[in-house]
Length: 180
Image (cartoon, rainbow, N blue to C red; front, side, top):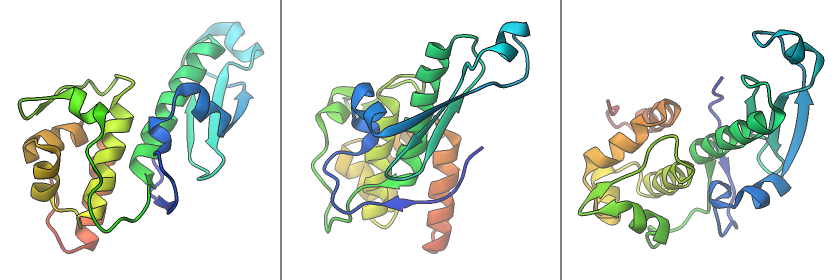
């Protein structure tokens, strides 16, 4: 389900979760498979399951719950973007980078507005996870940097439970208390 490993790339200008779908697909290897389960004979005869592997990091996203390969590819791509957001860290900078235009467009009066199912969610999550790692997991510092409350950051983390788990593991290693 969720592998806990962090991949650090030092010279990357844009986090892969922020790439367009076409650009990210170009950085991936796609494998089609047959899977068992509901869906009748069609599902067992046709390779509708999709597994996408990001070539640089080895992280994966997969989907097989739909009968359509195109639908499964879209879901696998979204899951890959989430996996990259949680486990793929961009460069190690000495200070927090400038807040992205995407973040600013989603933030109004200190409140972050994005659904965990929205295509922008992985990019916002990745930006926050990078900032948290750069600030030694200080939630108040990152909240101030993004001009939101710490509870808004925790709400974003709760949108994808593996992100909260990953952050709590890192906070524990740094000697900080876990977030709930």
